[in-house]
Length: 277
Image 1 (cartoon, rainbow, N blue to C red):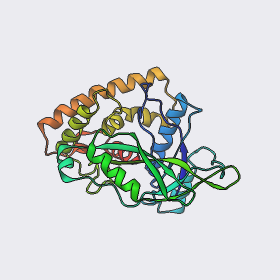
Image 2 (cartoon, one colour; image 1 turned 90 degrees about the vertical axis):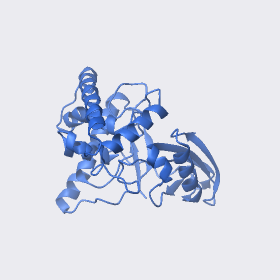
Image 3 (cartoon, rainbow, N blue to C red; image 1 turned 45 degrees about the vertical axis):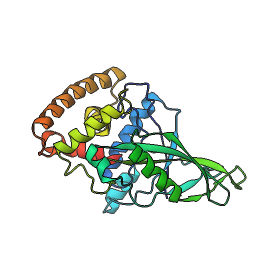
């Protein structure tokens, strides 16, 4: 179990990775760079806002001492104090949903607030943020009810009844979802999930993650390269990205059996960014 502190992006701002609680996939050097870049962009907007999430991501570990050292060199916030602490939980197997929901294109995340007793048992579970998919909400609820929890503590280190947010997701483009992954994600997959997501979230928040990654790619690349684009520059780059995304959607509607990555010039960068969160 790994605890990681990251700065979330306020949903009211038109910024990169907007509307997403940044859930870092620890491991590969490329994904680490993108997560660090997203963190830097978020801190430019909200340097005092910090969130905490449990992230047991052991896969894709660096395969050399040099890669490990490079990954460890990525700047991260200082570790949190040991006490008091929130409850922690073990996620277990990847979340899955019924086939009928997959066929309709359901994707997204749900958040439940779990109250955990001093004995580590679940006291209550309340839906905090719906995915707007009954199938995903129910799958997350069942998983949260079956999880193993460890009690939180007070400043003295004594176990106390306290709460923690459990956030889980499903998407065909997500490598952590059964049968998922952006590498073999077709245009048909994209259109199915994109169309469902737009109907399910008419307000435009949150943004469909592949769209968010695509329209954020230029700004992410600049930050990784050491630049610090201004808010105006980031917004201009994003507007250009949004126009390119609309063109990509039209292409995919015409060629549904083709792979999405075959339509993207910066395919490796886009793949790494999608897989980083």
